[in-house]
Image 1 (cartoon, rainbow, N blue to C red):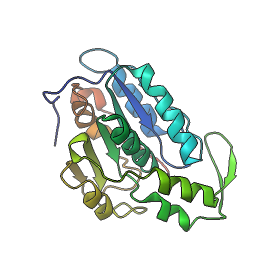
Image 2: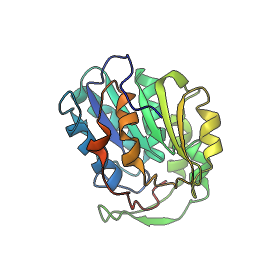
Image 3: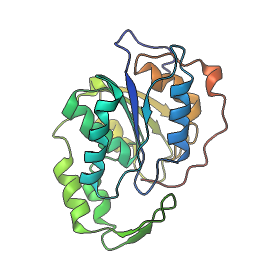
Image 4: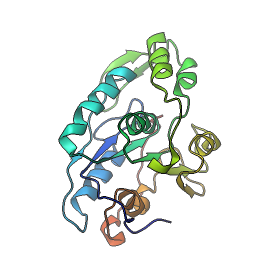
Length: 218
């Protein structure tokens, strides 16, 4: 497992993107933000925005925050946030850490058309429409440069097949957590590797936190 900062330019900030129907106050968002405050080199600017449910609006908001995080921000995204992080990584040639990332999400939401959701973090109610599927299809990168990515995969993901992500990000640095779930509840154990991908060192003892009890957020 990667535990020390690589010989790469240090990231100037971190942008964490939550998963579908999750929020900026989710356990993983808070954990990444706390890690940014505990780095050996001192606190690192961190943004954990509340993303709109429409993919194009979510990507636009995330992209608008890049300028506030310096010239080389590190992107971190979970599930659908991993997809959005990948979109930005390819568009702006940035490094990214993706956690159980959604692959070909347009096909994923195809089965949700007409389904109503309530966001537990904001109370917002919305219904999945064809526009969600179409926007995701339009945003999907033609290819992924594996050199940009660290991929964290739970082998027992109950929502997404980890083999799809392993194939899509083939050649990338990859960590498999045996028995890991979709929420990647052991993320705290892997924070040093996450920040090492951004050229920063986080002491393992700085991440001695309980496992996350994150809900299903694809």
